[in-house]
Image (cartoon, rainbow, N blue to C red):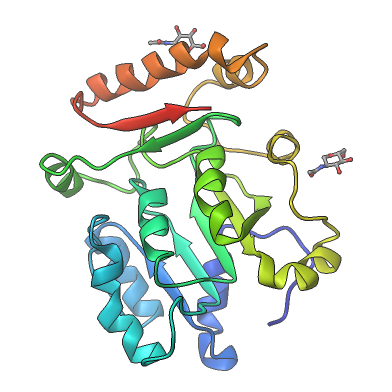
Length: 248
Ligand SMILES: *[C@@H]1O[C@H](CO)[C@@H](O)[C@H](O)[C@H]1NC(C)=O
Ligand SMILES: *[C@@H]1O[C@H](CO)[C@@H](O)[C@H](O)[C@H]1NC(C)=O
């Protein structure tokens, strides 16, 4: 694997997969929406299906078995990229039951700063319906999960934060830390607060709100405001019953 010593761009996965034939990369892309999948098909003629977060691992199993055969799990993927503007972290968590990617790139809700652990959750009866009205170009400020939520969930599987791009977090597995640390001039694990402060991020809420939440004297001083912002937006989108987690 040839690591470029440069900030990872959101197009990393695209670049890697276009090289797939050359480098025999094994990856797994999770997309949302038929039109986006169709575009993926043009680039990668591989496996495509719609994932249900409650059975994501089970759904992926037959396809991954084609690649990994009956070797012991978790299977070592090189790259896993998840960006579904929905229950991204839940899908990753589910897939980590069977795969262990070296590089894990997940879209995060940048406007919910550390230490707040936010994640959208799945509504068994409403979510499949709402998914049908999903459009990739429409803002979904209450979808996805925050950086601190992702780290909290992925750390037990051996992941550290490498980089934040405008809307994605790139995690690396501890098994490749020895290659990553000198290559990127970092010492893992990095401080998520410092990384967040140092990054250029894309917010779907006013920066003044995010600043207030991030620099609060104590998380308890602002968690109520974050909570009511999310609830308010869910009501505005006609999705009042949408379940979510918010903690710190
Ligand atoms: C953040 O930026 C400061 C100043 O440029 C630098 O000293 C520090 O190493 C950076 N930390 C991280 C975690 O990126
Ligand atoms: C959203 O958060 C901001 C900043 O904390 C706060 O001023 C505003 O009242 C909140 N909005 C709602 C609807 O709760």
